[in-house]
Amino acid sequence: MNEKGTLYLCPTPIGNLEDITLRTLSVLKNADIIAAEDTRHSLGLLNHFEIKKPLVSYHEHNKKERGEELIKKLLAGENIALVTDAGTPAISDPGEDLVKLCIDSGVNVVPLPGANAAITALIGSGLSASRFAFQGFLPVNKKERKNRLEEVAHYPETLIFYEAPHKLKVTLKDLADILGNRKICLCRELTKKFEEFKPCFLSEAISYYDENEPRGEYVLIVEGSDVHEIFEDERSLEEIYEEYIKSGTDSKEAIKLAAKKKNMTKREAYDILKK
Image 1 (tube, helix red, strand yellow):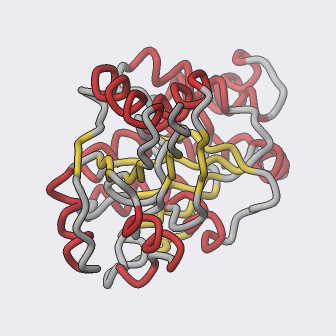
Image 2: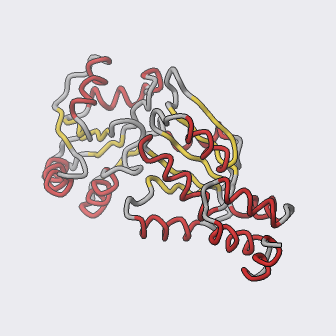
Image 3: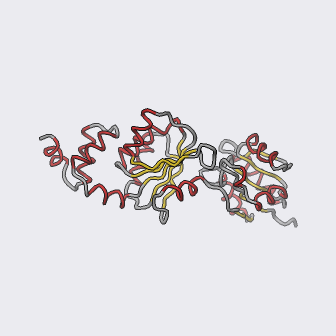
């Protein structure tokens, strides 16, 4: 009976090619097959390091069929290296499903440490890194998106989101509407030539991107609720209300959110603000 193969989870650079590890290079050179989210993208990386191995696609749209094929190869004794387009496989990535298949099939999984956008952004953000909650990409559906943000609104942990440039403006306004005017660090083009960490408040980020087009992929590091609520409680109702208005929240909703921050009813807040 053939000995089962191993699935290796191989992190790849998120920008700077020098961030690949010696161990990852060794695994890629010795694997029987390399499974990649985008074979064309990964081929450039492999060619750069002069690695010639059979390359197959494994992505969100073929993960069920291709996953079953890869499991058969692993059970037959072949070793497979899994890579994503950039960063660590299985993080906001269909590799998560392949790992589950391997565990269910008794196939050994070996995760390799390496590049990860979320952790890179977190440790350079200046916000608390002792406790954090990774949220990945927010749902596209408006209702699901709102539900997700309301779910995490009271998390004391620092929140981590991924976002594409064309969705950034909408996401910043949604964050401000539901989470309030928290501290945020916008991290983009990590490890690349134009890497940028922009620490500010959500209202400031919204104002900035009203005048500047977002560029590059973003990691958003957002302050947890416990820190935020202490900060807000020290301010006046009027100051909190004005911050919501500046972030694009309509007056009625701004009154409701400001009242909540000051532990008063909406009617009490309305009477004070409309004097």
